[in-house]
Image (cartoon, rainbow, N blue to C red; front, side):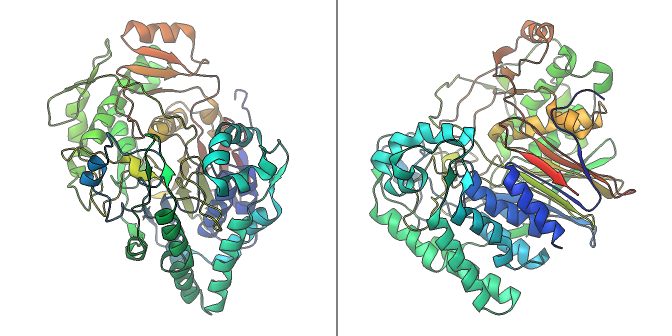
Length: 575
């Protein structure tokens, strides 16, 4: 075994991973106190909305995958909120917008994650909502130590908070200053908001009645009313310099419900991999697996020129289909049967030139598209969080929560959190598959993964990273499955990703042929990729693939957890 940055965390009773070690501690404690993966997952989510407020918040969204051992089935949870009914292409065009902005109130969608966790807790959890929220309430009340990446983010956002968003400044710039590393950061607004939610639940009596009362409190009560009143009274400037009020209404909140869905799946060399549907980018992982299954990757060798070139070209084909076909299936017919078939992959595989990088966007069933470079970049940095859990009963959970970032929208006074801005994923071209429509859910890059082998538990994994999520996790998966690396070795290994297709986030950047490379990829390999026509962009060291994973051996019951060391805070814990 080669050196790893962290040990493989092994446990026989339960293992958790998350994007911040304090959330992982809370999730592990939930398992140790008799909770299951749903209890642990929800516990970690609430904690992360405080610990990683620039990456996730209570008004964000979440896809969840759950393997329930008693029923031997995988369930997907759709926790993506829709666009307000007042959000139309005509409105944005009349206001002079070339694109939906990334910030402010106009890209806000209905918060989906809170109801998704409530619904999953009600159906599968054992803890009350109040019990689940206890660790987060303590963090909000007593504070947590500021860490380097959060301090750096707050330094970048300081001027806007101070000049435009007073509620954000009050919470995140105590005394008008960026907190120092190690300084305890509290959020009294968050504490008061969710303490009231917990009290509302406890007064209701039964677990089900308590969940319903909490849902009503959020979506048809004080929280929804506070959000709507604030966004309709406070003018919020966006990236275009336009100042607008919100489009979201109380009726939009009242109409929303998360839902359980069937996952999508393909088999890769005897392993069944599960993803959420085409309202997220999850199926693109499965399309890549189908394409790569036709090659002898082990014979090519790990991170060789031949391997990486083949991998990149297959990724380009899969992401071209994402751009052409993926959208909210309630509004668009997505031909998943075709896209995920082995026959389709075999046909598409013939487009891969093993000697030359393609500069075209080539979705299936349409003419190739010439790409024009669009290099503008968002002023915001960061992405999202991820969490996994496996319990002693063999249940597995993977979730990639995001949205509700403090960088993109001001805190709602008194609530302690902002709205989400996932509406920036929509397009104002009515011919685009992702065109804006009232009530439509924007597709999201969020994409957790579960895998079974021979019908038994195998792995839960995922990563932050926007459009790169199903590139980084795919390399991790292949490192483990094809190249025999243990979980932590597979997470530590250097990665690449392509920016060849239009980006999902504003301003939908396009960089034809670009491949971002971590410096630990050997120089002769980088040169070989350039000789095949790839445009190489060297990334900072240890900046890719912030993956988390738990591998389970059902024969022994031993679980193996790992966390990429990138950014410093993610951790796996078990016992």
